[in-house]
Image (cartoon, chains in turn orange, brown):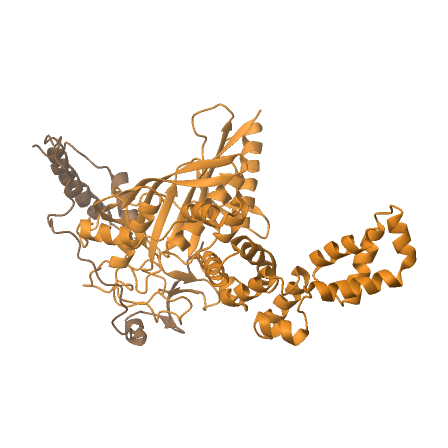
Length: 477
Length: 100
């Protein structure tokens, strides 16, 4: 039987606010335990939550970016469960009335563009962290993360393969960073993903029973976890078994998903509107402010790069992968004053390769956009050959100065002066009468011999285009 | 409305008590069964009111939520906060071992 995979994703994006969603405690990562949890986060009696306006603006910005309805009124609810890292005994979340509903995200798949529906996105607070290492038979609780603002983004079950799920996640990851609402750091848990996976016979319209996979903290693991889970479910159903609706944990070491011991009545959260928090009302002023601050989105930027700079869709895609890279490129184009395609080649070529080699992102580039533009200008005006320019770039990366300084110091200036090249070419021809006779007898391949000899005689500095042109002229009978 | 329209049995009470992490004695279970049944009776009485076209109201305050500026404030005195906990170590609250 042929099977169809159905995947929906839930992403928790940690919002990039300075303070927590309901308290003034800081959100910085990696502080000493419990130094960033105040009386509100630790749920001392008598405290009240006060909503962070910036978290609301960020959620609205996301809603607008995915073409969703941003509700003028939304409601915070209590999700009740007991766990030691949740000191109130409930998590403040949004349930029946989320701030964002019905959006869409366009992703690139092997079969072209595909629209993935976004069911909803809601604001909620994160829980603290439980530490199970050796603490004399106790569990340690660090509440630093408690109260950190999260935007939970829930997709429709629109994805049909692990590859599509990864494409969706990467697109979403790029988007939240463009919007500057989430740093996207997956190792630190700023962008976390749960996957709902089910399979059904191809052609069936009803959904199969799904398993929810938790704990997938990299794009690679998402793909592997889903692939494993799909194989598991198909094997189960093919042998007459049934998929159980449950939560499974992905183990990246063994590359498998495992059933989490399902907690009894784990899903009875007894949601109700939080009486501490009146309805969240978005004013027109606030929405206008959010709209005005909206940055250019990845799609629009990609299209503009194609139109404005004449780039291929591929290059435009690479250059707009992050806002920082796109800014670097545009700064370099502006500084170079022209040659947008040549600049693109350098950014996606030498620069990208060097960054990759050194494990840096664009922020760590040791050649600034202005400096790269200086080099591109020297390539464009023929001062250095393309080959020599790569050496210049390496020297610039190593801190030997700007392009002009390196070219001068290393004597890499290309000889483009006709008479100087002609002089060298005449000497080369005079020294090789046998090859000259062969060429004139019609042996075309001897031409490359003369090119090589001329370049060698000029110690690689002769402009190759000029060498070709002058050789053709002087070798002619 | 006469009492007893809704009647919760001991099992329902046990479930609700478990979710709320309450330990109840036998007599307490019976008392809660009666109290909660009466509350549910009241709810069903309200459910009977026609509310078509009435927008649900979660809060009586129409002004809406006041928003706070995203600023870090209030010094955190960890030692004072930890001092009220029964057991702490190295800046952590300690709780009975949670088995995953």
